[in-house]
Amino acid sequence: MVKFLLLALAFGLAQAEIEGKWITLAIVADNVDKIEPAGEMRLYCREITCEEECKILKITFYVHENGQCSLTTVTGYLQEDGETYRTQYQGDNHYLVVKQTPENIVFYSENVDRAGRKTKLIFVLGHKTLTHEQKDKLGEFALSKNIPPENIREVLDIDPCPQ
Image 1 (spheres, one colour):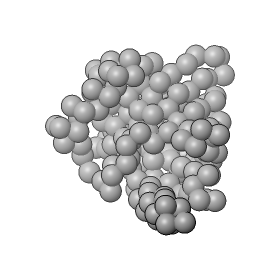
Image 2 (cartoon, one colour):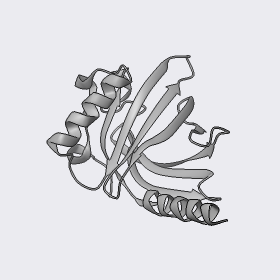
Image 3 (cartoon, helix red, strand yellow):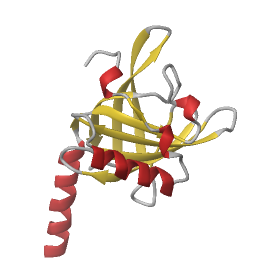
């Protein structure tokens, strides 16, 4: 019973840390065209909410197309592995939180678009510009997923959508 309570407490803390206002700091993709300005996977995150003990994860973000910012919310559903979420947005997406601190959340995602093209993505969310050390770690993580580090796009300072 004590182990269960400790697990529940730890999960509750993790849920509390992930929920709230978050802003996209950087995006990385193997198909870099997907994350360039006006790319369909260049998402400017604003908020994350959990429902049903985080079995449902809602992410609210803007996309910038044709000079306009459109607010969108996607709902991810926790899969049987207990780590991966699945949602439909510009195709089929499987994603998971790979790192979470009070300052940042890092998501790894795989998107298969309607044409069947697979794209590996990394989204870094937070509240302030990445440090040099964080950028280096992001580059290393990108390499571990076979994504060239030169495909890192820092977007915080050029986010054109309302905060």
